[in-house]
Length: 599
Image (cartoon, rainbow, N blue to C red; front, side, top):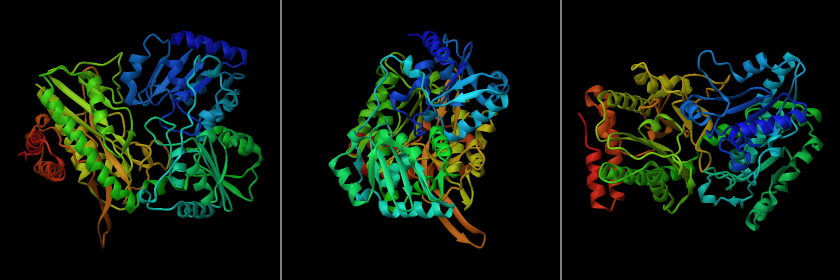
C-alpha cells in the first residue's frame, strides 16, 4: 500500500473505534532510541525512515514532527504522502502539544498505544486533552489492524558477560541501586529501559539492531529481584547465572499481567523518561505511590570504571586503525576508479566486522557524498545511493559494537577540487572540534558550559548545525547515552548533567548546506581529572579516536597558532599510536604524510 492508502485504512479503523485522532510515536515498550523492525509503526505509516519523529493522524489531516537532523530527509521521503512536515524548532511551527491544544475539539477521542509512549509525554498529552474537554485511551494498538505482514518480534539468546569485561559485579550494582532508591525515599523500582537492565545484570542481547540488548523488565525491591525475559532467550548459562545471583525469572509476556497485582511496602521509583505511560497508569490505578525521578542507573552507567576504560582505549585504537586504512583506500581510489556510497559503506562495514572482537555495527554507516552529506542521518540504499564524484566532500560516520567498547567516529574527506568557501567552513568546524577536545574546565560544568567552544567558530560564519555538539557513548551498549551531552539549548528542565571523569562524550560540530554539502568531524573524548588546586578540581578530555583529519580540506591560514599546535599535536598522537600497528608499507607512507605538521 502507498502511504495515502495506509492512512485511509487507519482512519477507517479509527472510525470503527470512535476516535478522531491517532498518535504514533517512534518507540518500543522500553523507550529505546533504536527499535526493532516490529515496532517501526511510524515508519510504516508515513514512509519517513528517520530514527526520530511523531506522527499524528486526524480524520482530515496528518502531521509529522521531527528535528533538524532530518528536515532534508523528511521533506524528500514525505513527498506525495499527504502528511504535513512539522520542522521542530523552526519559527512559527507549533509543537505537538500546541497543535493538539489548537486542533482537538471538546469530546474528541485520541488513541495511542500506552506501551509506545514515555510516561512524561503521555502525562503532558493527557493534560492538554483534558483542558480541551477531549479524551484519551491508551490500551489499544490500531496499527496491528492495517499493517500487513508485520515483522515478528525478537527473542535472541541472552549473553552473560565474562567478569574480565565488567569491572563491577552484579551484586555490587544491585546494592548501589537499592541504596539510591532508599535515599530517594523508595522501597522498590521498576526498570524497563533495556540498556539500564543490561548494565545492571552484566548481560547483553541481540534483539535490537546495532544495540546489544535483550527485551526485559525488572522489579527490584529491598528484598527481591525479578527479571522478566522471553523464555526463548534463556540459555543454560543464563539460567545458572540467575540462580547464582538469586534473581527470580518470569516470562516477559507475564509482566503486564503481574503489574496490577504488585504490592509494595512503600514508594516505587519510576523514571518518567525511561518508563512507558501504560506502566505508570497501571501503577497509579493499583494504588502505588510513585516517586518520579531519574533512574540512579543512568549516571552510574555513564561513568566508566577502570576496567571499562582500559578495554575502551584498546578498542578505540584498533577501530581507529580500521577507519584510517579505509580513508587511505578512498583517497587513493577516488577519481581513479568507480566508487559509490553504498559500496564504500559495505567495504568499511566488512573491514570493521572482520575485527576479532567486533560483534556488530553500532549504527547504520552513513556514507554520503556531496548533497547527501547535508542530511545528518542519511543512509545509502540499493534503491537510492550516489556515485562518488571527482570533486566534493565525502562524509563517513560509522562505529562498531565490540567486546570491550562501543565506537563512533566521523571524518569528512576532500576529493578533487573543493571551493575555498567550503574549505573555510571545514577549517572552522575543525577549529571548534579542537577547541572542545582541548578544553580545561572546572568540575561541575555541564554540556551547556562547553558547547560554545565547538559551536563558536561555526557561529562566526553565521551558520549553525541543528543538533547537539556531543552525546554520551555506552560501554558495549547504545552509541547514544545520557544523562550528559553537549548542546547550547536545554531541551528539558534539569537536563544539563554534570560531566564527570570516566564519562565518554562525542565532539562533533558540523556544517550542513542543503543541496550542496555536509561537513562533520567527530572524535570521542574521555573526561579525565587534570589537577586540583585552590581554585578547585580541573578536568580535561583525552581523545580516544585516533584518525587523521584530512589536511587537503584545511586552510592553515584560517587557523590560529594555538589551533595549529593542537592539530599537529593530535596528528603526532595518531601517528605514534597507529604506525606500529601497520604492516602495509603503502599505508605507512600514507599515514606519515596524512599526519605531517601544518603551519
